[in-house]
Length: 79
Ligand code: FES
Image (cartoon, rainbow, N blue to C red; front, side, top):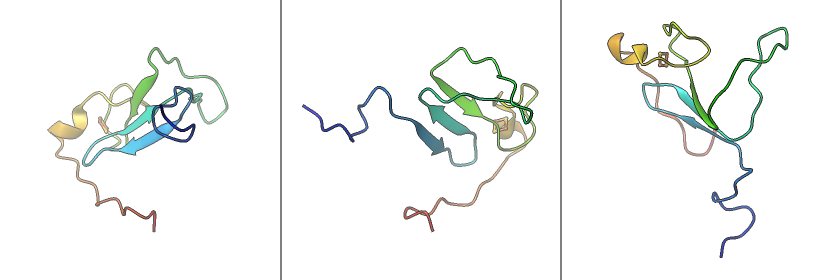
């Protein structure tokens, strides 16, 4: 049995900053353009580009690997 705030909740929203890669968005979060128009989404988990080189923005297409995109380490306490 799990507590309501544990990661197994089906309605939980989670954003994972992948080292040298995209932001993985898990959960039911609307993705919209800057003027509020919905961006089509077919999966519950999507990868958002943060390298700027994807040809299918806002989604990641794997190009970050080709351009050797590097990120800074994420601080564990959010500082
Ligand atoms: S992060 Fe994957 S293409 Fe930009």
